[in-house]
Length: 144
Image (cartoon, rainbow, N blue to C red):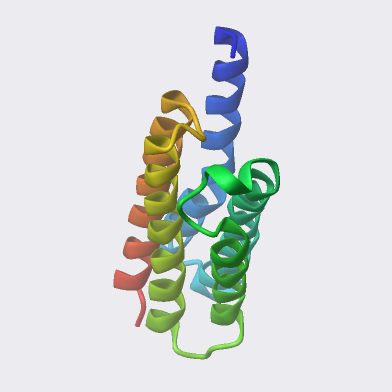
């Protein structure tokens, strides 16, 4: 991948994390009545599904070379990401999505070891995932 394409990918990934950052800022600014927490959870479900879709695509193109059945794990994680939208206990909602983000990152680490993804992509995923997980943890701590 060319350097300018990697810069675009990094910029877009960081831009994709801004709703999580905005939710934290909103909570800190006392905007909880605007449902900033729930908005971050709905966006989280979309992002987790997007990342799961990457794994699904990797499975379809390289099924025999993978030690992990990405078809199953990607679908299970995407469904788990949707579950918090149905629950009423905020701490549980965030912890489920945090678990999804960690699971996806662990799978990506295995995909890096298997040569299925490039190091720059894994490093980007790691950086953005840690930022998002940090935001979700802050949102958990700000719950009444």
